[in-house]
Structures are given as structure tokens and as C-alpha cells.
Length: 223
Length: 98
Image (tube, rainbow over all chains, first blue to last red; front, top):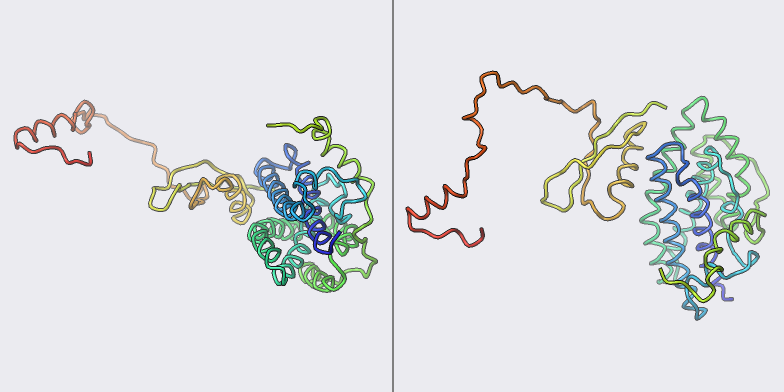
């Protein structure tokens, strides 16, 4: 596997798995408007994953669905942060914001890449991510301003912080430390990142569910 | 969480009129904007949206007509027929773009 494929898969797998996790809120988000918005964000993430899988598929001589669905759990390149199943709103918002903040830093670096195709797709993705960041930020501001919300959010952020660091390569991590610290107005604990390449037990379960329809029709299905 | 209702108006394309699309409930304008975007703009169906807090809308809902002033209404008055007659009298054709 080339370094390029590896990089594309890391971003694509993050977007696919997080898109799936966020879609678990469809129908049960705290209120109707949020349900629609969060589901829409989830669909966008999956759309980004598809665009990236298409680039991978072209290099590997296969198709995007095969790349997305036909791998073994250990072959996924997603970061543990997106794999966690945290069906609780404070943790969901904490993860959403940590991921979007890290993803923004990663997209900035991809947009500056010498690989013009990759830089172009990163710019395209970033134009949609702007709204995901606005959504995440407004929730964070709201929760930080609330006496009930703040402690719950802070607890969730502390729990997820080592995972958030693991989304980025080492050289991009200091920027994440700065941005998250500035928003929270505090110094984050100096912890060991939970790195990409390790997987959470919940990933296998997620993949089992996500690929069940595809596996039920091995010859392929037409919709 | 206290929420306000924001009425959403949607324009399909530049130059068209804004039309009432529905409403969103949101705790503040930032939430309202994102929710309106997602509910009324994510499928490319809108070129612009207006958000108006419902309590900023001045409603008028009382229309009295104590003396039954029918003659001020135009029901039953066919402009089309009148125009046709006028054109026949003047001997001109209807404009081509009608």
C-alpha cells in the first residue's frame, strides 16, 4: 500500500466511521431540529468518505464500495476517537467538536499538499466542514455557558482528549493543543495519545452492522 | 432550554419572491441559522433564506366589513373578458407574450 493510499484511507475511514456513529442519533437526538441537522452532517461525512474512497479505488483498481465495506476490521485506518460508541449527548458533542477541530487542522495541511488532486478534494471537503464547525462551536459555547452543561462537557472532553490527539500526526498535535486550550481557557492534561492503528472493540460491531446488507447480497444488489 | 420560534422564508432563485417555508425552534440565532440551513437549504432548493423571530412579526388578523361593501371586491369581474371587448373595439390584437 502506497503512502498516498494510506493517507487517503485514514481520512476516509475517519469520515465514514464518524458519519455512521453520528447517524446513530437519527430519530433520537435531543430535539427535532437537531435531529435533522446532525443527520445531515452525518450524511455529509459519508459523502466525503465516498469521494476519498473513489481516489483510493482508482489506485487499487477496484470500486469505492469495495474499499469502504470489504476490508477486515484491522485493515481500517480510522482513529479510535471516531470508533467509540458514545450515545450520550455531552460526549457526542465533545467528540464532534474535538474531531472537527482536529480535522480542520488536517484539512489545512492537506490543502497545502503538493498532490494537487488531494489538495483540491481537501478544499472541497473543507467548504462543507465550515458548517460542521459552526455547528460544533455553537454547541460548545452553549454548553460552556451553562452551569449544568459545562461540567458534563468538561468531563467528556477530558475523557476523549487522548483520543483526539490520536487523530493527528505528531507534528500537527501542538496546534490542536493550542486551539482546544484557547476555547476552554485552560491547559489540557499532558497525556499519551491513543494512536491510529489501534482499534476499539466497538469497531468490529459497527462494521458487522454496516456491512450486513452488502454481505447479504454478495453478487451485488441494484437499488 | 428555552427556545424561540423562527419563521423561515425561502427564495428559490435570484429575483424570485421570498415565500414562507416553515419554521424552526432554536435557542438562539446561531442555532436557528444552522437548523434553517439544514432543513431548507441542504438539497439545493434555496438560493436565500430569511429568518424572522416569530415575536418580531406584526400580525393583523381583524378585517371588518360591517356594511358589506361588495363593490370593493372584484369577484366575478373578468378582466380577460373586458380586455377582449376593449381590443375588439379598438381593433388591436393581444400582445404576443400573453
